[in-house]
Amino acid sequence: MQKTSFALALFCFSYGCVQENLVEVNSQGAGVKVVKEDERPFGCRVVGDVRGKSRSVDVDKARRGAENDLKNQAAKLKANYVVLEIDRSGHVGTSQYSDAFLGGKALRCEDRDKEEKKDEKVKG
Image 1: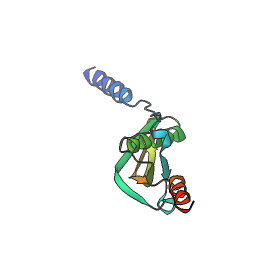
Image 2: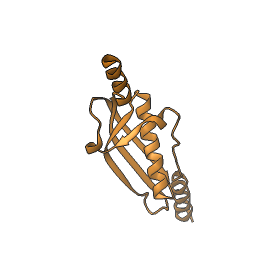
Image 3: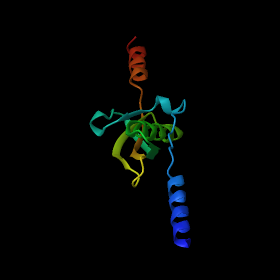
């Protein structure tokens, strides 16, 4: 009887720990663009490493949540781009949930529109 109670309690505790954890993008994070290394703009400097993670029953939702978390972290560093270096996802044990993890470098890049306007002022 004790073994059954212990196993049931362990199962309930374990299952209770696995929950959906979706991250929403905040207003600052919405302005951050996630790119691959070959899409990286010129004139950037690395301002830090960033990581994003999220969990959902839907794999795509988990990935979007992780990207939102990544963008929010980059925005805290005043970055406007993230170069994606790590992109992993998978099921959590035998549960129905999927975890997504993204990692990369937060970049502060010069805005091309501002540069072009500066050039026009110098020429004009």
